[in-house]
Length: 393
Ligand code: SDX
Image 1: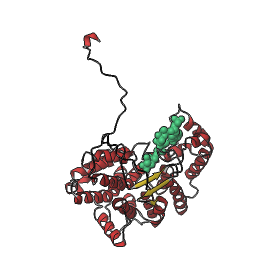
Image 2 (image 1 turned 90 degrees about the vertical axis):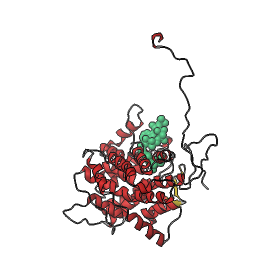
Image 3 (image 1 turned 180 degrees about the horizontal axis):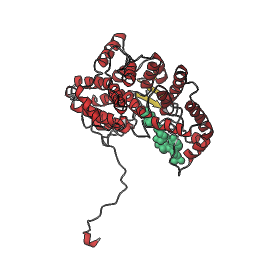
Image 4 (image 1 turned 135 degrees about the vertical axis):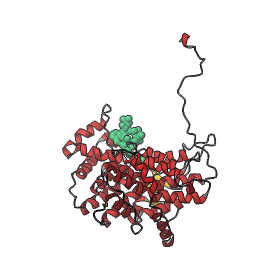
């Protein structure tokens, strides 16, 4: 049984919480979703099955999975009026800014799934968010490049639908590449949930007041955007490109170690993992596979990433601080090879993590002992003192 934090009866806070969804052992580099190791799920399962597992706690039967996939598929379109929210943004708006705005706006659209006291509302909100996030992310991408929105289709699987909504154009039929779809689906799975990370804690804290679930997910998207969190995948690839060639690696390792230099090795280090992030291992294997299959096995950036990892993990600074590659270190290389711009890396993380946010939200909301979150502070300010009139200051 995993060690879990327990509520301190002395105060009502979500600063620590009990959860049965995801277990991480940072020292051993272990990640379990409802008890199943992430490498087994990434290798043997697929994203919608993992969504079912995270939401309901058990792997589905064939009939349960078919029903769940059908329910998600039938909710992939967004309300036609939501298209107007996109046109209010400048074309160069970051897709994460668009996703925060549009998902927040969903709180004003789907009134039949916002009453969190109603189990049916909670269920529909969960399905809607999982189903519509790829559509919204793809629409944000299409809007940013000035191409028409592509509607989701019911005859495609989740990952293929997302790729088609991103890359199809009216002028020609999009050919689904099963290799890319498999790689995309695996990336979704690797990002699905990760215990009480910053964005999940944001969703829990916002939801603890009973707020609209769509607005709470928008808060999670905002938190994930930061470069120390989900924004690291975009920053990691940009760092690797800045390094450019293996001979420049020592210079950047020195910069990462220099306290006066703001440069950090993005995609390295973790709040919890003080060993290899198990997701990074799977991502690294996928990078090799996908790039080979895409015929870009000699990708220069992958060569820089592997050499950087090798040199950093031989350097006492990183070894002493237990800084290993995390999930963001290799993901950008795969996503860029698949045709995504760096600005779409974090939106892809957000659409993947939506099931984690929603599963943790559902677990908390359905806990009869739930109380509004109230993280504690350690007061370091002035002691009590009397007011002084301005003429006497
Ligand atoms: C994600 O929580 C989650 O689960 C998140 C996530 C998820 O799935 O939700 O796993 C996803 O956010 C992964 C992390 C992505 N972020 C990055 O890759 C950004 C680069 N990494 C760092 O910013 C940092 O490692 C953090 C934010 C990830 C972790 O920060 P910590 O654990 O608070 O570490 P720290 O900032 O206290 O650093 C400890 C030491 C410091 O040096 P000293 O003061 O001890 O001398 O390690 C150094 C830091 O300067 N350090 C780094 C470094 N990360 C930490 N030095 C160089 N490069 C780095 N990447």
